[in-house]
Length: 330
Image 1: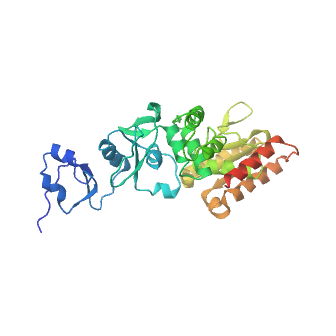
Image 2: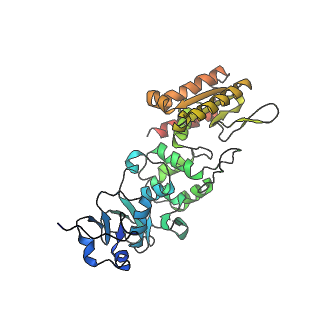
C-alpha cells in the first residue's frame, strides 16, 4: 500500500481544519488517507497522536460561529482543579454567545447558555467563559467541596516575600455578582452555599478540603496568608493555615515537599516557629490516603486542645459551622 504523502511541517502530527489544509496547498484527497481520522466535521486528526486541549479548542471554537468554551473545558483551560471524572472528560464543551441555540457537532457537548458580554473572555486566543461564569456553571456538575475548592482557586492571590506574586483570576465580589445576576442556572443553590465558604489565600484544592474538614470537627476558622514573625518582626514562616491566638500552624505538604531541598526547608520552618512557641501540624497526601481529611483534621484538633482551645457553649459560630458541615455532606 502506498504511504500517504508527508504533510507540511505546521500540519504534521497535529489536528487541522480542511480550510487550513487548503491554505497549505495540500490536495483535498489527502484528508481521506488512512493516517488521519475525522474527529469532527471539517477537522482531521492523525491517528495515535494526543492533541493539546488548547489546540483542539482553538479549532472547534473557530469552526463554531460565536462558539465559547464553557463548563469543564473552560475550567481546564483556566487551570482550575477538577474531580477526576471531569479531568478525564475528552468532550469539548461549547456554547454560543447568543444563547439561543447549542452547537451540534461530533466531539462537542453543546450548551445553551445566556451569556453577557462580560461573561466571555479570550484566553490565549480561545473564547472561554469568564472565571466567575465558569465557576458558577461548574455548580451544575461538581460536588460541593470541589466547587468551594474551584472558587478558592479563582480568587486566590498571594504576595509573599518569597516566590512569584500570585494574581487572582477574579475577586470574591465577582463570584457574588455572578450569582446575583444569574439566578436561574442549574446548581445555583449549591453555588450560593459554596460562596459562603470560599476564601482568598488557599493555594490548592487539598488545602481547601482540609480547611473545610477543620470546620466539620468544630474548630474556628483559620487565618490564611498569615505570616509568623519572630520577636524582632522578621518573617519565620507562611503556614497554609494558622490559629494565631493559639499559636498553631497547619501546612498541607504536596508532592514537591518530598524533594530533599524542600524537606530541609520544611524542617527549618518547623524548628524556627517551634522556637517562637508555635505548634506545627503537617498534613501530607499519605496522611489523607490513610485517615481522610476528617482524620487529619483531628490531628489539628488535638494540637488546638493542647494549646488551650475549648469549645465554648453558646458560641454562635459553632451553630454556623455545624450547618456548614451538614451542607458539605449533602
